[in-house]
Each structure stands twice: as structure tokens, then as C-alpha cells.
Image (cartoon, rainbow, N blue to C red; front, side, top):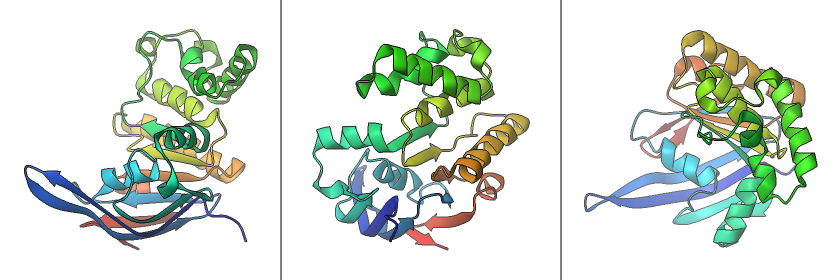
Length: 225
């Protein structure tokens, strides 16, 4: 049997807001197989951000179980969580999160520095990914010298350079115009269909979710099909 990339069982998460206890996630069960393209939708306050943080090992559930690519996340300490984030997950954010004073090439190779890859190899792999994103000629440009769409492609290259089991995208087109959004979604579709990259998108936009092969809605902390 193929090991799921994500397997959650009965995940709950509470947090305090203005002295009030909020039940953000209420018994989440979620399985994502290798090669899936899943969109998770939901209105503001539905628990999307909380679920994304748990999927991305940025936070842990209060109760429940979570296995990421076969590893038991609930048994990990902070160092192990940091390692699994760098090794297993590629992150793409709405605001790109590029290092402002660092070239596109250096931004892309950053995860490999933490992975202990030699400079020559990480430079070669970073150039390869920039070429695949159509940005080979922009390798030495700083983020403020790139358009929003180009910055998001740099962010995608950075997310994928470690060959992660999961690409986790949080509102990846939220700061882009319609045509640029379409271009980024086409890149994601191609990565999924042609290379089998497992993708989970967190979004509130119907047109973004429609590009996924499967979609779920999060409402009041519960997942609905």
C-alpha cells in the first residue's frame, strides 16, 4: 500500500483569543495520497490558517494524530519539526517571502544551505529550477526588480528545489492580477500532472480551487466534501 503524504485522524486545535477559548479545528480527518492536487476552501474564521499551520508542521494539534509522509509528527521535538519542514514540505505564500537583498538564484538555493548541500551543487540545482520556471535570465535580479508573477515563480523554484513530498501553497495567487494568477495556476497544474508533485492549496477563491482535482471545504473547524 502506498504511504499517504498526509494522514490526519481526529485532529483538534484550541487557542485563546481575547480571553475566549476558540475551538479552531474539530476532529479533522484528512488523507492525501501521493500525486494528489487538493484545494481546501473556507471563509474567514473557518480554521484554514490553523489547518495550514498544522499541515506545514508550524504548529501541533492539541489532540489527534498526524503522519506526514509516514512520519509521526506528534512525536517530534522542535528540531525534528524544523528538519521535516525543510526536507518534506515546500512552502509557497501569498506574499512570496523572498529575501529582499538576495538575488533570485540565492533565494532559490537557500533551503539547500540548511540541508548541507555543497555550494556548487546547490547553485547548479537553483539555476536548473529557475530555467524551468522561465527565469534563467533573471537569476541575478533582486526581488524588487521582478514582477509579482516572477517573484512567485522564484518562490515556487525555492519550494521545489529540495524535491519535497508536499507542496503547500497558502493563497498563492492572492497578490497577483488575473492573468498572472492564471499563469501560476498553469505552472502548478503542470507540476502535478506531468511530474506528480503532490499539492495542497489553501484558498478562499473558487476559481483557484476549481483547478484542483479534489476540493474540500472547511467550515467552523470541520471538513466537508
